[in-house]
Image (cartoon, rainbow, N blue to C red):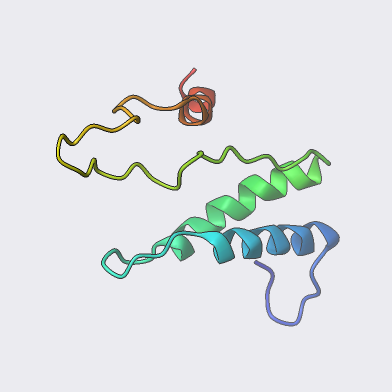
Length: 96
């Protein structure tokens, strides 16, 4: 982030807007401490690189916010322990 009193550049403004939107929709828990502020510098750099290259900022979002434990009598659920396609694609970029 820029120093106090220094006007934001166009890229910094766009990055701030994107990070603000991400922050508004992040999952918050009453039992787990929020660590989003520790991740913000990395997120700003990644988004800044994308915005400065005039590329689209793309996100892969899972169909479900999280995989909940099975409930009910027989504890069967449709989702298995393996990653779904969105999780596979989001991880494969960094693994391959």
